[in-house]
Image (cartoon, rainbow, N blue to C red; front, side):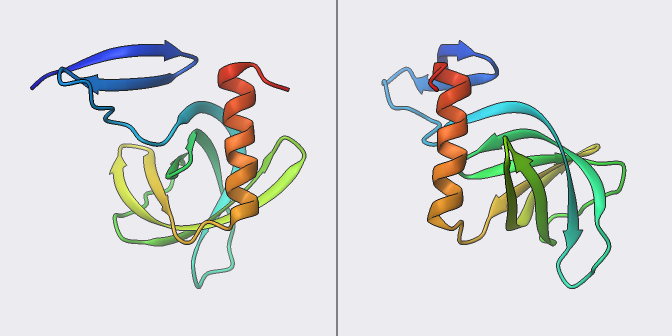
Length: 124
């Protein structure tokens, strides 16, 4: 069965199949947040942009190649809160690498969800 886009707003899209089941279960938004990342076990921070942020992961854009399966720590500020998130690179495409969270702490999950709600739903 095909899919039908049902909502588009600021880079957020929920897709449902023809049968009516939602394909994406976790919200995400497009961002333009400067930050750093480091390969776990290495101390050197590498500049990056967080170009996509969601409850299941984020997308890093960097001039340095990342590879599927690498463990990475992303460091960035979400509004005024410094965040440090660990995960594994799940997919790469050109300069972009998708970081899937590993054991996202509840307080960080709440900050991310609050930020998504603020941007997507214009909530304060």
